[in-house]
Length: 124
Image 1 (spheres, helix red, strand yellow):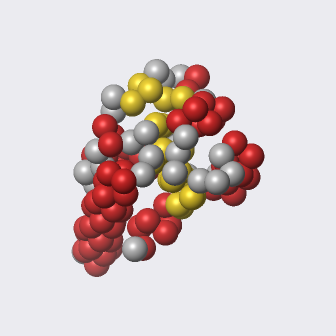
Image 2 (image 1 turned 60 degrees about the vertical axis):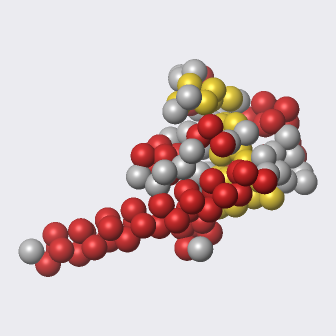
C-alpha cells in the first residue's frame, strides 16, 4: 500500500511538473523560435500530459527518429542539420541520456541559440 501511495504521489507531482514546463514553453514560443531536440517519450509526455502546443514550435529534431518517422504530433521530424534552417532562438533538449552530446552538436550548428535542458524546465 505504501509503495502504491508513493507512486501515486510521484506521478501526480511529475504530471504537475510537465504541465508547468509545457506552460512555460508555450509562453516562450509566443516570443521566440523554439525547437525541441528529441522526439521521443519526453516530447510526447510534454504534449499528452503537459499540454505543450506543437503548433507553437519552430521545429522538431531527432537524430534517430528522423529516419523512422515522418511526423509526430503534426510536426515533421527533422535531422540535426536541419536545425540551422529553423533559426531557433531556443532549443529544448528533451533527452537526459544524450544531453551533453546534443549540446556539443548544437554549439557547432547554432552557436548563438539558448539551450534549455529538461531538468531545468521541470524544476522551474
